[in-house]
Length: 497
Image (tube, rainbow, N blue to C red):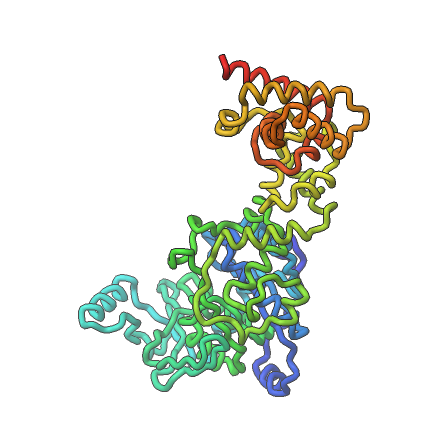
């Protein structure tokens, strides 16, 4: 079948409860995890970490990961969001083995299951109006009770007529408990009487989340459900649906949420943006993966993990029980580590692309790979790298005002003039020869090296902070160096006057 994004989907065989139960009990089922984003927005940090944990565990166990697009929210789901989610996963290298499967293409299957639950008396039609339900809830609140459905239609035993509107509710057990062992949280027990008869089909016939998730997990033979602990309250409800359908349960692992540095739920003000925005700001995918894996999981005090190490060492039983804290500075530190280690040609291509997007040509300037080697240790992101090297490829249009006021003095102007005169006749344009001229200039003037190097840095780059000045002079080039020194002298003369 064809997905809405134009991607050909894998054929999915429908679930057979009896066949599946036997298959599970043989203990031969391969590990299958799933990442089920809702395409109502971008792929954010929390979702990316969930995808990573599912991907890592599937790889570790020699299993597979399913990509499932939970797009039943028809009003808010968009093709653009689907594309952004898939692009984010592809950029991070989190490939899926099955899918993408779209829930909107499986409505016939959900209706089949709902009809089966009705036939088994595990579901029933509810005719209560919204107004009545709200009145019941208000009265329950007034009585100090937990608001829930009062089972008004549970025993009506009838179907709606052509002119009636009704939802379908799951007949949740009234007695007993739901007990499950969560890999992260430990044993969880919930009394059945505490749970509603939840709606599994709306009045228009469309299925609801808790029903579709269970059906999909059965049909796709999901063995491990690794998701955020904001879904923990849904798990007992889903377990009862699993049981009603005669299916064994997957293993559940509910991962604590990611918080901001202030302990509040992560939001944009903490730096929580789309995964693709991290790409655009110049975070390397391997750096983001390394940072994400440490948000809620650890292996001793180790901070840096190669991908093969992550797969080998990761285990869901080692996920922390407490919430993780997002720290943008830490992410930048990790990214800087990977910038220092990355292949120079790869970074050169990234830099060239970013400069091109800014309308900066590379023909009249140093080789990009040489620039990478000189600047990579000074940058935290690829955008930071691009910001720092622009002056090597185009004229300066901005100067650091503090640096100009501090270093553009009359004495500096004289030193710069002498230096410009000497390099103008330099035949061997190399860093060692330029360094020799620098030293000769300061020795002849009887001054210290920084008294020439600092104003020269400002003249060439607009800032007093650059890599080795002889390397910078070489990369700027002879003509540009002389021209920029001349412009600096004009600025100095204006300042003196």
